[in-house]
Length: 282
Ligand code: NAD
Image 1 (tube, rainbow, N blue to C red):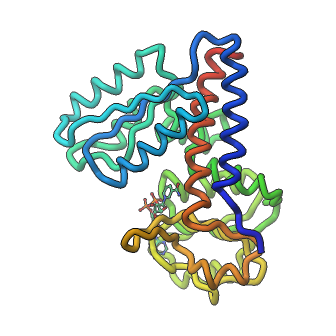
Image 2: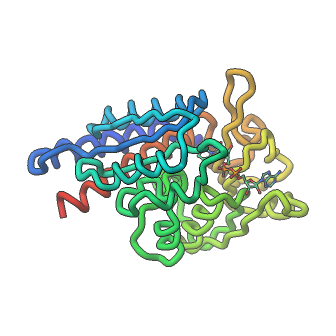
């Protein structure tokens, strides 16, 4: 059994990215830049934003952290997004989710210019992904594929079960697996008899936010497990998989923390570089 070490793999990817940025700076007039918008003071969001900003800086991305009050109106937030859209010094814009309830999340995400949409959440980038056109791919599904590739797993012909059908994880990873010629079953909270879809799967991606949703009796020997879930028990974080028992049957498995999470951040930073490269280096 191999534990897929997202922490280490992301370090390697971040180092490669830093080298690319250092090289780019020999000809480009400025480093890549990322603006992160945080509305309100949700403690988990604050931690995510700080981590993204810190890691962006560590690879040489100039990161600007824009903290806005919970009470901000939609109109005011639109103005902030437009300002960043029109700022030639900003390459990527990220809106930390969730937004407060009085703000229409989809509408705000769609306002981010498609060329600055480094989260790949806008309807344009998602539409392009589903039509096999060049697009910015959401960081979590992109990070999962990078991790699978790092371990040399050939997805062609594999039976893959994705559990979760959200726009940010379940649906795009289902599409990316199909693009790699896997056969994909996408499950969700209304799926009957979940085990019938997991027991023969060669690879399972689980992204639901349910502790111990996947247990050892639900998987076959040699299964590959990608656990995207983030659940908190007190100060501890765990995924959606009963890791200690499932790992004995798996050929490859991601831990939580230290699996998909760090891969997501490195994929986000790579998206920022992709935008910058298109602007300055092509
Ligand atoms: P979401 O709430 O938008 O979607 C959850 C999905 O899980 C839904 O499609 C729902 O139908 C399905 N689901 C819920 N309970 C189920 C059950 N009992 N059986 C089968 N399907 C079930 O969540 P999301 O934004 O896709 O995130 C999912 C999880 O992944 C969360 O724990 C989130 O914190 C985590 N996450 C992690 C990263 C990362 O970088 N590691 C990134 C994004 C999300």
